[in-house]
Image 1: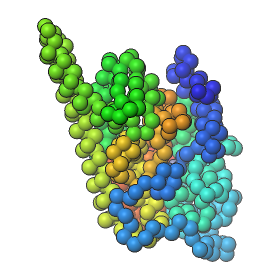
Image 2: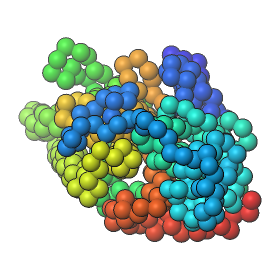
Image 3: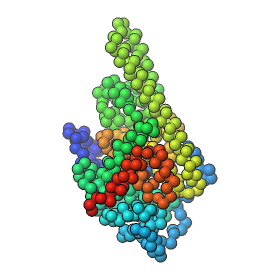
Image 4: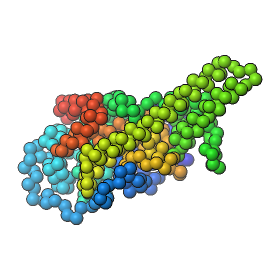
Length: 419
Ligand SMILES: [Zn+2]
């Protein structure tokens, strides 16, 4: 067990939500994971965990790199309304100036420029420099989407600092807290977020001791709360336990009824738990279908052809679904072999579960896990909001109407932040 992680099991630690400690943990994880980076950007197909597309692209895979960059050095792009000149590579200015809206550029220009560093992937580090640093692609097939997304994280952090929200909530990337309730409300309306308390209550009351029908022992001690239960789960285990519980509650009820002198209280409790677990299992299965339907509708509506940027937009919605489901759709796919989403974050990013067989969890509190969901959906919304082509934003506004309304409001409100 790593020392930096073990801090979390110290009494009182979970009550502290310190950005510095979070950073230390992130850095510790970054160092130990071997990648050297914190995974703020999502993983498209072919990333750390290749996934089979539900709907394979009709032709072939879109190109991942461009042969030739556009002519951005002539400076013509600075002639647009509210042009940005951020002082990093002019190429990134070009992307904002040629592919963003004047409104999004006006917002960028209200705040100090955030440094942009060329990298072969996208992520944001909030601890680099005064306001953090954006790391993003140059010469990939989806430079625009990556830059808009990562700059969305950066503005979430910047607006959080300048509005005082980061300080008052002891968080980083705090502006997105203003739209988190709507993300969850829409998630509930979409059937992607639901009450799963029966699952954790069952584990806490009874523990888990099984082999999932094979030889591998899987145990969670009775009395384990959600965090302690989740930290025992590697990718796929969450769904394996769900499946196991579906059978176990039937056995529990049978045993309660077959006791020598059946205790009516115990029988009633077993009946109730069986009903709750069955309902929860149903909700999970329904959610898989809902996710698949959205995936299909997106491809039909966007018709990406060979356009990597359009694929990136589609994958960004897959990541929203991944975030709202707390990583559980990928967990289901891992367990069943049935692919649902084409892109998302690595295991454990949106939950308190293990990242793989070797690594421990990334998050040790529900707040930590939900923070990932919050900042990612915010960055996706910012990305869609920024494109001149509003097709994907319109789709999102239909899928998540409460979020879109509130997001637009807080973007307008950002003009009043004193910088
Ligand atoms: Zn991100």
